[in-house]
Image 1 (cartoon, rainbow, N blue to C red):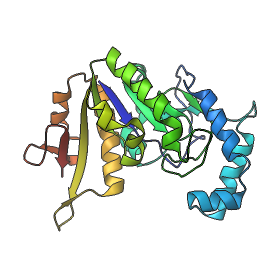
Image 2: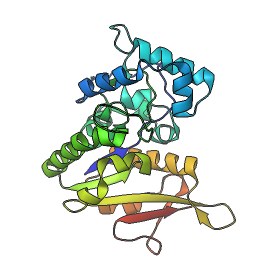
Image 3: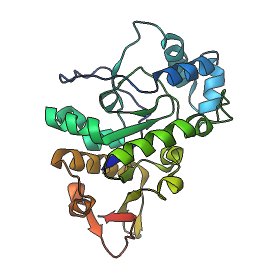
Length: 253
């Protein structure tokens, strides 16, 4: 069973790391190629392209300039990303066996690196998959990554049990071309809904945290049978048979 998860925009390169054995991204050369595309962009260009503040644009301009430097900071991806999903996952409290299981079963999609194992070292960056960045392979990052990612997951799932747990956002899961993947493998997409008094709704930051909690649940319990996901109850969520379909499993609270 393979899990896919989105990265996070916010990063943490300060918290003391547990002792882990790091690995290197498979698509590091492609990341360097994309860095060559974004490195010439000015802070103003980045602000307009990414729709971010001038302060964030300057920060990421500086990251882009130092990306190829030998002394650029590096950190395992699962410990570098610091958004809602990673708060829900809480990887800093993983055991060594949790990290081992995650390394084999969790894949983090990335606009810059394509796909990352949890312990793959990444440098500070910001490049969302949905950004319309012209590049040598097309007009956006989906066109840049489609061939590599489709081949990567086809090979990975064929060597595993052919089950993909999609805990990534639509922006990132689109890069895997799930419609094509679903013709050969089983894809299950958990959906997290909250009742805030006006019916059940997907609330973005809560859903992200739910995806992170489910990722932790799979890793911590070393789950290989997708049916076991229906027992997930972290954070007060519970599986709804009534609201679920064969490949979209709804969890409510």
